[in-house]
Image (tube, rainbow, N blue to C red; front, side, top):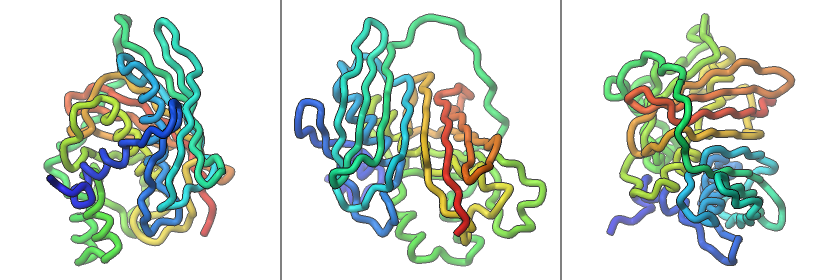
Length: 290
């Protein structure tokens, strides 16, 4: 049997497999990594798992709205307390509070709905190169720097997603000339995630927080290199439109309509390779000069 610590995809599934310690209370692991704070996508994904575990499993998630209230501490377990707000004929609503060391660090409201027949329309997927024609993120960094720094090498080995930027990375201020506040990446889990739809939804929730705020930074500073800003996610909202698998390629198309007052807003649309719009995402982040 493969050790999940050696397989990033299995490690992600393991991370999302919460321990139930009471009827509506779950505990999630928080890996002891050399990070200043727990990755927000991890907390959001685990909270959604907790919410889903208290439903009958027949209604998929259709939306979530969340706030990041305090930074989580790596290596310390997080307890998720679920409130069963409503079980209606068409919708199920859950509220989740994430607590670490006695303090609330995150809260989430999730709604579940069995899709019904109705109108059909969507914005088309932008025309972009196929993922196989693009370099892996680690390879692109290695090509530019001549080698991959040890810290990035460790991160690349543990990264549960294959990430490929549609446009080549910008490395210098000159590269930013004419850059719009947009970014797009192809992504997929680096290995199979099983067949539980809730796991795929929560894994995509994890991934959705990885780089959405890139779109805010694109016209301001190179994405890879020393940062001029300390960044933190403030809130996060997602709408799930269609079933999907997170271990298959999806395009994460992102844009930022505005950054002002120390905050930047980003919007994302996630498509499958057939051009079907799967998920819509909105996030606001805090940007403070270092």
